[in-house]
Length: 260
Image 1 (cartoon, rainbow, N blue to C red):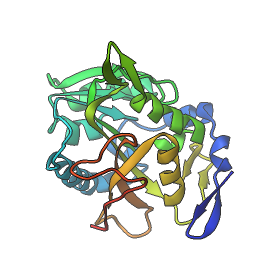
Image 2 (cartoon, helix red, strand yellow):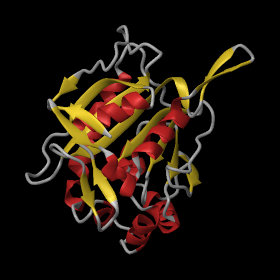
Image 3 (tube, rainbow, N blue to C red):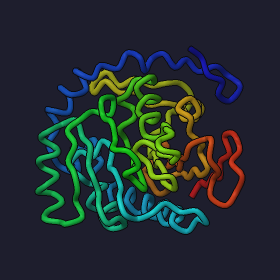
């Protein structure tokens, strides 16, 4: 299948070659450290967290902001994002991670904390969030391990709308909730890493998959101050396409972008 990007078609079928077994085997060989979670680039952790914090604070300042009660850390690893970002901004944080060793280590890395909620040992391809539980679902540097189909289905499970006793219920996300995606972007084509069985998608394909999942991207910001030679990293704020974005009518593929 092809998607138009920068007036040229992008072949998106490479993501179908992802192997969850190979990825699990790779991560089982990685040390449960910040450096391990960041592929040897542990020194960028503080820069990453500061960029994420700025983005999150901007979401809290919207006219229709997400609440600050409950967050979900997707692909949580040892809990780096939970400890340094989400726990500082939410009353309760759940972690979902496919590697059980990382989850166990997260308990020690984060330490005793009443703000830590559930530890879910699932890959996102199998995870089903509780109904209307989360104000923010934070997904960072994990979607490259999902096939395109599982990418779409995961977010549909987060955002699927049901009618129940005349009340509107959204699976996973609360009605005012937001999904945040933070991912590497390739320059043009899908790039495959055969070592950890992951892909890096170009911007046009990522936006296409959001749309296929029924999501509207209302804010997009580039992570600044990363070392040269690394992938471009962007943060996306998403809500269901059928709703309205904070303070403005929701338009198809509406985006507020920033390079800082």
